[in-house]
Figure (cartoon, rainbow, N blue to C red):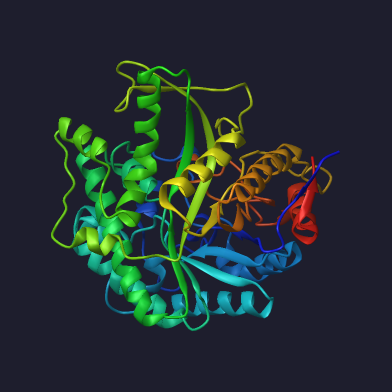
Length: 447
């Protein structure tokens, strides 16, 4: 038996997002977001599921915090529903929405858990989408106003903030590939949204320095790893460009003040360009305190003519996949973390999401999800290796605390370490919950 020892300095956490867990979609002044509209549009979400009730965490947040306390985490990452706190997108603040988050924050603090707030986890108020959404620069201003309001309301108690979660998903997956809300399929729209999200991030960072001078702020891009199938130039280039689409496209502007030229030229061949205005890149490249990294999967990749924008196809390493169909590749986690450190230097990293989808149900009061435990073991081993290699990893936050509304997959796909009965909202701790609790307590686990 081999023991993996994690550093005492490593902070532990669990994460959720507002639309995925809160429910109470029409309560206390909340207005629809793009995800309310998208999930209520026939054919967009599996089984016509929606987030109207989700995990009912809006009413059960105290119970959820009690689970967090038993888990022993240092921090809880959650997101704010923009349309719950500013129902018109801009302007008047909804005091009932503010009260919900104030109560949640206080409950966390009272239980010794540090709040980490994500400002934008994809649920843009529908009223702003109707006015042009993230394709419009006016939404940048609306986001800065919203961010400023949240900093003023909660910055006294909350010192860790994330501006944007997974900007690749909020831009390209949602506006180029059309898989997520608002469901557009335009490369130019994807590029416009990606750029405007980054400008909004930079403006929020600027405001944060004035309003929460003793806090830390970053953002949370999602990454994966494509290992070239062979050393051929075509395989190498296909994998590099495909990863660049997620990684460098959203990191170079923040850390280097420029977009990767290879992708700029590739997009130009498809008659799409970045809508940069004077001063944008200076705003985007504001210094940040940490980088959040969301990692789930990776595989081999090889060149294939005509296979999408980057002419690359994935070649799974073996048959192991989670129940959402994603290959399990913990070595990719190690490689991408080392690559980020090599490329961007000593930027502190929080793993803001890492976890696995396994759809086990409750049997005799227990959820035996050994596969999830094995996944977490593999990835925490990769994490420890990366730390040994000098990568400055500050914290690890598991996705997710709760089974929840898994976006376009509806309620079929379960990522939680706590099982949710979506009819009764009963919470049942899975075996992975207890394993994670013990790992946090002991700062180690056995392979």
